[in-house]
Length: 262
Image (tube, rainbow, N blue to C red; front, side):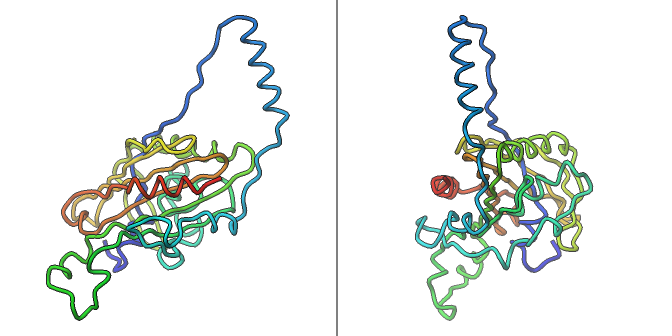
């Protein structure tokens, strides 16, 4: 990678493997009584008011904050994440939702978006810089940083956002080009990955990214829907990448964030 801010690049140029835990409905060929019951439930659902999107300000209050999750420090994503979708472009429109989800931007059609970062605390973080040992310095990059994005939608917009991501995994399996804030990168492969199963619906995907001709690195992204709010998670550990590994998304971060959603 060419950028000194590895975390920022990783957040914007990676759009990892998507495994979807999409819930599929089963058709019912049962009795007339069952069909009648289904019809009544359908009528009741159609008379319910359509979901209304939360505002960006309301989403900000739902992001994990300091003290919400033990072992992680919550910080604003203002300095590490793209400000808008115009900052992240791909060479295939169907791949845009993947890139946006990885950059903590809304994967669907909405302006309601909020984001932050969760950094795993290390023993070195509590030390005075002058007291750091050689081992502390060597392990300075062995820390997991998770970029979290929240977006909210009117009506069935959240379901459509998740579908756009799952469709993108299939359409972009052979890779795509991405330009994030003026920097070009190449995703070589996109594949489904095992999701957490959190929320009402969750999908996850992995991406193999060309590291400027110095091999490839694998990144993971997960998208979780709860009601009409969508949460995206993307983690990076520079030390793990340097060793040819991949960064897993901390399960406790996903669990804690989804629990805060309405």
